[in-house]
Length: 620
Image (cartoon, rainbow, N blue to C red; front, side, top):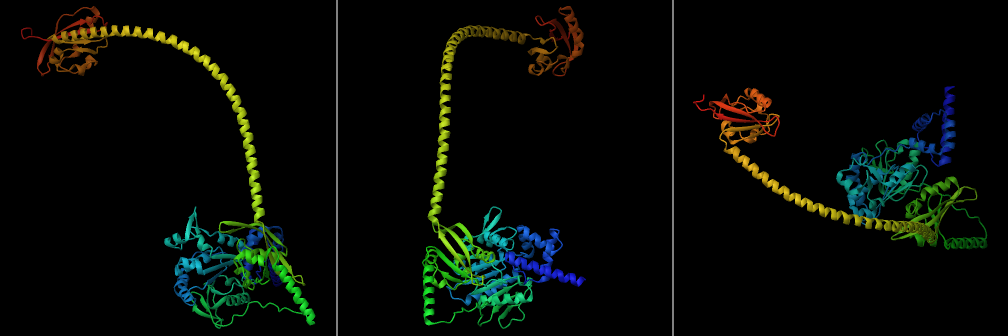
């Protein structure tokens, strides 16, 4: 029973792979079933589905699930100069040998197959720029980067990487080849134009030809032996004689010594041996029905007429067969896109028109699988300072058996129409803007007119108020003049009184200074208000040290606490006290007897005046 279930599971997996191939054009039938099944089951587990049949139902109803599945299957692991030792060997040993085998003007063609997000392709560009010099590299080197993952290719085309992505680069190389754009770094534009990205399936699509170096690292390991053999056949066809093949650490060529010479098994570098490569595809020969000479001439005339009609079509047209080879370029296409008749027979992906002004290779693949015409409108193409616009139609051509036999691409020049539409749109927008501005201006004028009328009325009212205010000001001015005269009179009086007070003060100070005895005047709070020269000479304290100080807190030779009863008696009686002798210490530290008389301070209730004098020896 377990064997039956395993067989059923394997068949369901194969049916799912065929569905992916038919529905989306991704052919995974050449991949190793063990790793492929493991990754698909991981995605099924993420969406909580347990059978391949149920998962196919989900894919049929959810377009987003395809992207999630492909991201799981196609593991995009890459970085700038991944495996530095291998790249160093390539730079020092392989590139000089490659360049020595080419002429000084020959083009150098490089293919990075399975390039993922582009780091490998840009690593190749940096390596050749360092080997040749920037100008020579821009003239000679053309690098193709391909992958089956469109999302990875979009990231590669953007050429934007974080500082972490560029850690393998030295600061000098990063500054030389990358330009900072916000938090990211962009590959320099002139070198970016030498790197061409496109979708390519190494198991199905025709290889890029005439290569000098083919890099396919850690991609073959995902395929089974049969698929690997087919891919190596394609790689052998793609390389020129003595061209180099650079594989990954997990891949090697052990049984292909007749076609590939080992350059370095350690670094997985091989070289194509001389000899005929042979085409990877053999198209079926054209079958012509036997007939009379008249019939053959008729067929030739019809073919000539058909070719002439196609060549003179008023639209640019290019036809590509199922193998990707250009089979027709009409005269308009040759003129408009700089193509020549010799470009017929070349691979379409080798022509610039395949990716500029729009990526056509993926659209051709989509047309092949979906068997319907696709249109891309108003594609912009820059020609120096000029801009052209095209409507592009990609149409499948089917043979008598109903199978796709070719794809025809037509370019309709809609530059004049696009410019006219843009001009009409611009004029319409200008008219709408002008009309809106006119309406707004009209409304503003009306509003301004109303505001002006209101302002005139306010000005008239203000004028009347100003006249009234002027009259009031004149009256006030007269009053101020009168008051000024009064103030001048008062000022004169004050000046006279001040002079009188100054004279009185000078007189009093003269009197106080002339008194030989010490005189101290206290206010009602017992604070010193006057301290004459006699007090200074007696006690040694200056007037500025004691003025407004509490008398009883002063520390000098006179015992102030013994004077409290005298002051109290003087205040109670309101009369001068009798002379009292108090023991004290003079300013020079000599013990003396100080005769003190306390009198009420007339005009200051509560104040007293002390008269102090040192007693003579006869009085002691």
